[in-house]
Amino acid sequence: MCHNESVEKGNRAVERRASSAGLRFMPQSLFLSLILYVVLTISGIQAAMGQTTVRGWVNAAGQPANRVFVGVYETGGRMISFAWTDQNGHFSLTGVLPGKHRLSLEPESELLIPAERPIELQSGVKDPLELKLTLESRISRPHQVVDFIGTAAAASGHSSIPGGQITIKADGLRLGQITLGGAESWELRDVLTPLGTVTVTASDRFGIYRPQEIQIEVYAGETQYSADLVCTFRWWKVSLLALVLALPAVQELVLRRFRKKPKGLEEASTCNS
Image (cartoon, rainbow, N blue to C red):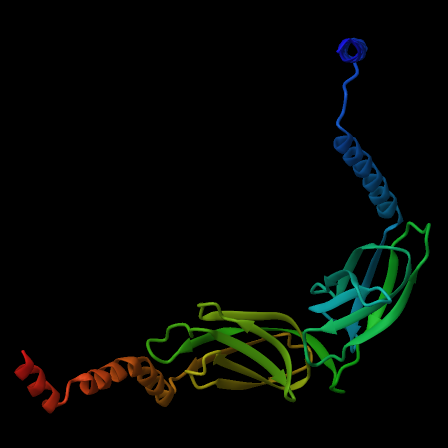
């Protein structure tokens, strides 16, 4: 008993001396968490110091290629960084570590052929890696950047088309697409377009309206075209939809008809009562 009391007194004395010296006792778990935090912070700073920026310009047929997805992948396939090209074809990728990587170009337009190429970033180099990249077109005619604008409405009351979308194609290849989102007016700007015939189509995702299309001739030097489209109902689809919606009510009426008791059973239940 006396030995335990002396040990407790010694511990309290040590605590008082440490407290007077401005020290605080820290639980072991908190101490280990603090060490882990410091290590991870230092590792993150070192990694950030080694990161490089990759910048570039993507073109096709001598024209800037916008709406191209640019991704950097490790040799194992994991994506490190990505960006979309702007209206001038420029992109900027940050957070890329030194080493050998794969650069992938995936255009939104079906006109352009996707491509990829290897890149290698050297350690200790602070300047961004500058690239000039070219995508091949599936159409050999000359190209230019064009703005398309217009309206799309439903024939009934000239209201907007529910679930409507505008698609622009050349030689069956999609150049661009936009969802109307409840508005009648639309615009697709900075579309890389081959010279010649282009088809502008208004449709809806539900297939209730007949697609309406207009053909436009794109000429060299003319960079803006307009198209006003009006879609009409497909009445057989509307009727079919109404029938499908009314089908549960029809089924309920039929079931009620056959749920009635046969005449013999009704008479027997009356006699038993």
